[in-house]
Image (cartoon, rainbow, N blue to C red; front, top):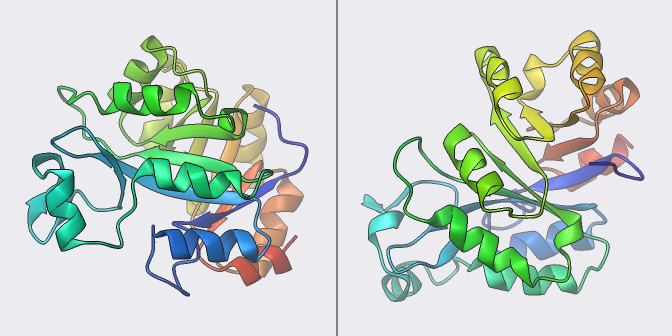
Length: 225
C-alpha cells in the first residue's frame, strides 16, 4: 500500500473537541485538514456495523444488543454507512477501519464489513486493521479487496506478521525506533502508528519515514508536518 504522502489520521476523529467516534468528531477532524480518520467497528446482534470503541455499552455487550435498542440508548452512535457517506463529502479522505474482535468463533462481522465495502466508491482510500489475527485471516479469505494491517501494543505480536495475510502493521508508537521502522519497511510493510499527540514526536516519526500517524489532536498532527 503506497501513499503519495504520509497520512495524518484523527484517532476516533477529533476526540478532544467532540465525543469520540461520532459524526461530529469525524467532521471536525476532516475540516481541520487531516488526511483521514481512524474509527472502531463492532457488529450488533442484528448484523449492523456500529462505530464505537468498547465491547460493551452500559455493561451490555454490543454483540448481544440490537440496533434499535442502541439507537435509544446511544443516539449519537453512528452506523458505518453514515461514516462512509460523510467521507464522500471529503473525497481525498482516507479511512482506517479498525475491526474490534476477540480471537474465537466469528459472528460474521468480517463478512458484514466486506459487504459494506463492496460497493463503496471510496474503497481505494480505505484499509482495515485489527488486533485479532483470526479476523484478518477471515477478511483475507473473504477477498475483502482492501489492505489489511495488524494492530499491536506488545512486541511479541510482531512475530505473527509472517503468518498473516497483511500488507501493513500498526505498532504503538513506543514500540518504534528508526531501526525498527526501517526493518518493517524493508519487509514491504506499510507502517502507521498511534496514538501520537505531540508535534515534536510527529515530526520525528515523519523524518524516520512512517506511512501514517494517528492522533487525538489535529492541531498537533498538522503542526508536526
